[in-house]
Amino acid sequence: MNNQLLKAGVACGRLDLTELADNFSDLHPPLDDHQALVAADRCYFCHDAPCMTACPTDIDIPLFIRQISTGTPLAAAKTILSQNILGGMCARVCPTETLCEQACVRNTAEGDPVEIGLLQRFATDHMMDQPHPFSRAAATGKRVAVIGAGPAGLSCAHRLAMHGHDVTLFDGRDKAGGLNEFGIAAYKSVDDFAHREVEWLLQIGGISVKTGQRLGEGLSLEGLRADYDAVFLSIGLGGVNALSRDGGEWPGVTNAVDFIAELRQASDMSQVAIGRDVVVIGGGMTAIDAAVQSKLLGALNVTLVYRRGRERMNASPFEQDLAASKGVQIITNAAPLGVQKSGDQWQVEFEFSDDDLNPTGERFSLPADQIFSAIGQKLNSSELPELDGGKILVGEAGRTRTPGVWAGGDCASGGEDLTVTAVAEGRIAAEDINAQLAG
Ligand SMILES: Cc1cc2nc3c(=O)[nH]c(=O)nc-3n(C[C@H](O)[C@H](O)[C@H](O)COP(=O)(O)OP(=O)(O)OC[C@H]3O[C@@H](n4cnc5c(N)ncnc54)[C@H](O)[C@@H]3O)c2cc1C
Ligand code: SF4
Image (spheres, rainbow, N blue to C red):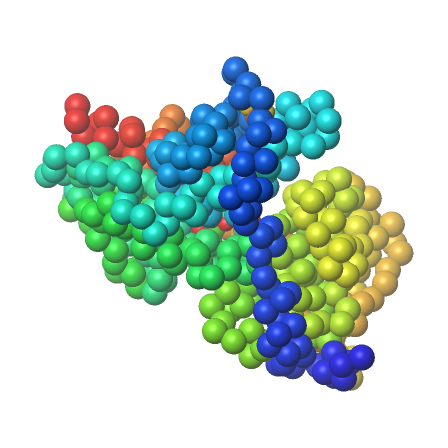
């Protein structure tokens, strides 16, 4: 065994570059032309297709699959992108096993759905080096501010630009893309795809990107409402929930989203330090991604601990299986009590609890060089319209209680926190904004 794997503490270079490249390669390699035709051939082109109903962006799935099967992938891509301008990223990150592919009649009948996600990727990949397929309507002279350049903001900005409005897309970070750029697991978005997709999307024109500008720190909602004809808020959930009940920090604990962002931005993965023993606390996609990527970086022991039962985890069975297949140990029904230093390591103490979080009184500790917390995110901004349950309260088409202000994506109430949902909400709000500006 490689001694770097056994090295105690937190260290860089546990694996060599070849192993790292292999570990972080495409989770689902793309289909070639022949494989795409074979996969498309399995579609029944159902009338009232259930896969389409299950897609939050309402992509005409049977139509685009037929276009692939007739050898016109660019037409297929246009079918997808006209509903979901980030169809390339969604093809890579959508939990299709709980959306379109779960609903596919071939899944219901045979347990083997049409590979809709991979076919969507096949089609959209054809478009990425082509001229932009959409053009702008005549200029309206209206100006819209979009705050947050993640999937919701990008989708909204693109649709508004198509309708001829001038969009200013603000983001607090130094790069557009939101969690597509800083959050999605590295093995789901290889070859700098998130960045390439943003560049491709901006080819529509009429969108001016201003990075390093935050709502609540220089940008005020009142100022934006005065300067623009409409405002769309798509700031995601930048804050993280605290592990301790009193909201305080525990020593030795790192926010899993920060670790994932560091990994996504690293030009050399071998320079990302990882512990020999890693404990991840949480049960959603972020927890799974932090645990799997810790393992792929060369951590020897990775344990994911979730406070309720497995069926209550937000991570899908596919993701749980992925983690298990990479060697992540999953412990359920155990809530963290605290962290203590013991020699050079941390000891994370847990107590078993039932699904309603009633403690059993039985405790155990896990040794850890690194502890990642992934127990959910929360809004992290001031200057917001009325909130509901910690998110911006929205009604029909993302309208907030503040006139002239819409919101969508993770920061808005309702809907699942998924890339595809954010894209759908951005597009729907853009159509509503357009209708109001025209009226
Ligand atoms: C680790 C992780 C992995 C995930 N994996 C998946 C997956 O595999 N599949 C999937 O479907 N979903 C996944 N998700 C969820 C998905 O990424 C989100 O639902 C989606 O990105 C939400 O899009 P959004 O545009 O609402 O917000 P975000 O993508 O969070 O974008 C918000 C943008 O707003 C900016 N911003 C924040 N505050 C301010 C401010 N005050 N002023 C200006 N700008 C601001 C941020 O910099 C960011 O660019 C994952 C989430 C995480 C955290
Ligand atoms: S449900 Fe399955 S078989 Fe029917 S149209 Fe959708 S992908 Fe094709």
